[in-house]
Image (cartoon, rainbow, N blue to C red; front, side, top):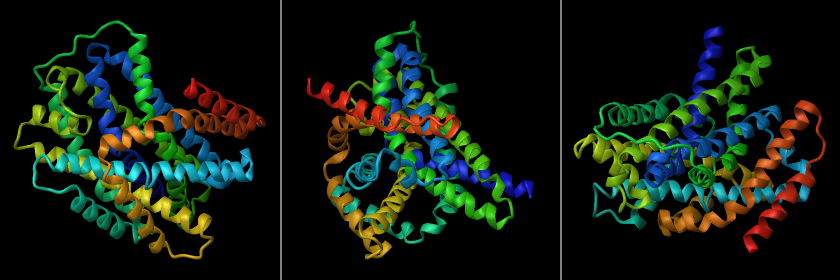
Length: 384
């Protein structure tokens, strides 16, 4: 029985990591490392706040709500809560998160297949995502047992070779506040907190089903929290590793576009023959994240938008159609489109996570004032 519990914890932790570790998580640590160079420790400190600590806060908060995002968001009011959920679905789904995964995969593979057309690649990618998502009940097991080990294998090869066998060293500088805030700002672009609210629901429900069947339903919350810790630890290692890699090779990456950073680092670290490994790592990371995002967006659309009047497969097809259209903007275009929206909305979602966590632990009741107060403040700042 203990062995079963450990198996559920590990596979759920790996699955949580893999669903989070998508396009933004691969690119933005490299963007930060290249820009700050010797100030990498300062920048990583800021970035880890917005890419690990803040999403982990959201995971813990959602776990205490048993993965019920409706209950979580209705504390700000039924209508405002649903509007926040609609915004979330759009940002992490067909208008942001999923097309970003598709375009980053294309950017990596097109280095090796220069004849590849973005339009045709996008059609193939959304078809593959559709096929995986048609079996939503198997997503966690598939991601945790199959795709994540492959992803970790590829990433480990890059990090070990680049960190321990690279001739380039990083000349570290003292703490720099501007680099800290640069890392903090770039961490927003990963959108990890936004995905947390839905990924936590998927993972919690999966753990609940597996532990209830095994007669260990009393361990659900504890197991979910342990899985969250595993995911947070793995993300921290990867962020530090890839940020450091980019900092140590920054002088060779000045003219490289953001979506080509990982393939370029892989080429510098492992050479041209092994560069296909890098493209495979990108594909695995983006595929696992896109599968999770498409699944939660489709389920939400069926239940809360159309009130079960359309099928899951129909909703999935519609979401992936929008995804295909947005993917034609390219990775850089999508990031530019999302940046102003994230700068305004992200702090409000963080505030909601914190006040809901305080409510569950200390019975802290204020919620509307801090959440909407911060939202108003961010709008004013954006308009100044």
